[in-house]
Amino acid sequence: MEKMRKIQAILFAIGENPHIGKTVLMKYIFFTDLIYYNQRGSFLFNSSQYIRLPNGPVDSEALAISTESNQYFAVEIKNTRYRARSKTYLTWNFRAKQPCDLSYFTPYERKLMKMVLIALKNHQARQVSDLTHRLRLWKEFSDGDAIPVEYFSLTESEIALLESHGLYIDGFQRKFCGKVIPVSKENADAIHPLNPERIASVEEILDNLIKEYPLPVLDAFYDAYLAWDDAFRRALRINPDIASELTEKGCDAVCYVSASVSTGDENNEELNRYCEMMEDDFNRTSDELLSSHSYREKELKNSLLEQTMGISRSMATSLPPSGRR
Image 1: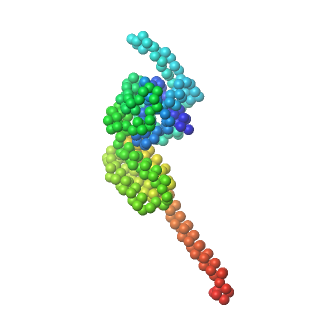
Image 2 (image 1 turned 30 degrees about the horizontal axis):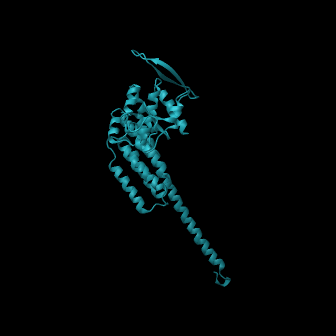
Image 3 (image 1 turned 120 degrees about the horizontal axis):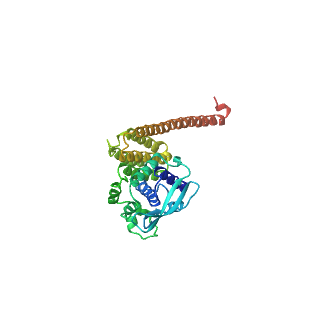
């Protein structure tokens, strides 16, 4: 599954930029993973190992996939001599054999991949490599070294550097995911139903996030965000098992809208439709939670009534005939 996501991500890149070279292609995978990790705490492509190479960090599996032709895309390797240079260089040309299957990615993941491709499109391979060389995850290791995952946590100065090159990371989306994902994981392992003190501590976090919501910057998503907040609070009380799913949807939505704003798409119809769709989705989840809770309460009352009637019937039948009415 994860290998196929990388293949589909490569097909996506070829579709967006048919002239993309191998160095930029590998940096596209890297920067997409890097941004996702700093927002969500995990790699988008579930990359098991990044290697420090002369041209920058490389996902070892993505490197292997893109080295030769396969059933998804063709790889042509040529010796190229650049103008005013006597030395020849190997160049890779990629040609898709089939279109990217977008179902492998959420709307935000597609938005993120496109943002990275746009940021890299007008840069030469050397410029893209030089940008990675300014990150400590490359500077502090030698060629061939595996880069520890913790080095993917960027410093504030590194985030500012990347954002100056159109690779947007920071903002409310990073704060939101950084707060909600740990809470969701913690409560998934807790004994249900959650006690009032635990619920109160989570709601304090949610209250603070509402206070910090960036209006008017993300105004288009505000109603949908409040709908998510209602659904999440209701899930904590009624069915904490679905809080993880709500967290994933909420993070993806906040990141999608934030990326749209960063890239100048905040007023387009597509974004407005997306916000309306997510608001409807969160409201539907909230209504379903309330409906299921009411149904369970009714079932519980009926069950208690049946138990009471059963006890009464048993007592009645156990009495001697003279004691019965």
